Image 1: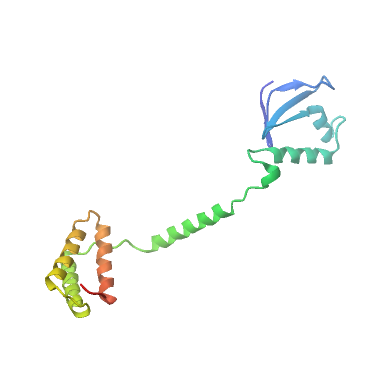
Image 2 (image 1 turned 180 degrees about the vertical axis):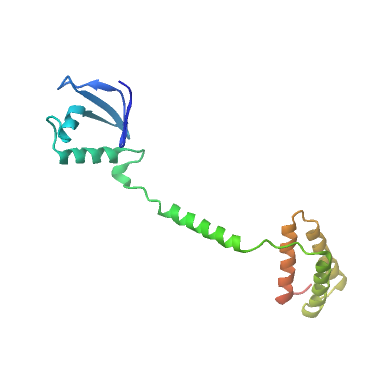
Length: 174
């Protein structure tokens, strides 16, 4: 006989029963525990022939179902997917929140020049600038580095950052 498949496990090749030679034994392995079940024994539970009563059959079926799988069911119990579901929900919420906000738009050269002049003026007004030429060089270098970025998105982020620096006070000594 070939290999049979039931809803609670995989059953290997059928063999003859030693007690009742006309029925078949199925040998199966669940989590390294071998189980032998006689077909005539199980048929009695369904009302055909002599065998176990239906309560014993249910118990046997439940035992086989719990033995399935690759975990140690007697120690661990049912698998808990709570953390995985929470993580999935967090990622989904983050994805939905990100879809509401648009990516920053790359500034035009006129916007960049305006921001540069505003930062120079705000720097002289708010900071204690000891070397004005150094501050101008530093700010210009920052703008040149930002302009050389390959991504328009990064340039947009840097422009937004410059706008934020204008709104919130610059602080420190340059």
